[in-house]
Image 1 (cartoon, rainbow, N blue to C red):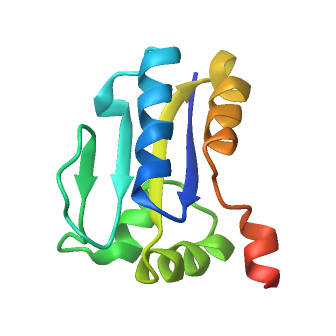
Image 2: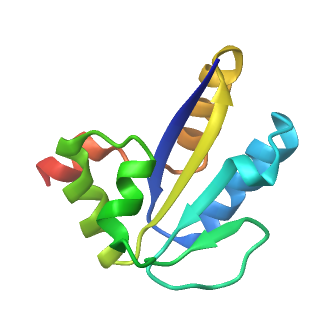
Length: 113
């Protein structure tokens, strides 16, 4: 069974490093990893700018809880980058460690700020 995990990064370099590590260490196919940013810069992953459904619609595709959607949308508006990956249950902890070790934002503390 796979789960979708999502993390926000303050800059593109950290997000790209996390994506590289997810694909290399976990062997994830690049079509299982998506990058969402306000710009449509080309990367080695699937970059997604706001589509015709808008950014809010694309967040629903990531299974982001309703209470976190505002934080993600505001983060992207301020230049953050979101990485989303479909990961097998057995690799979930390792994938989460990769995201955290590459500088994923702690949404709870960020929202408190």
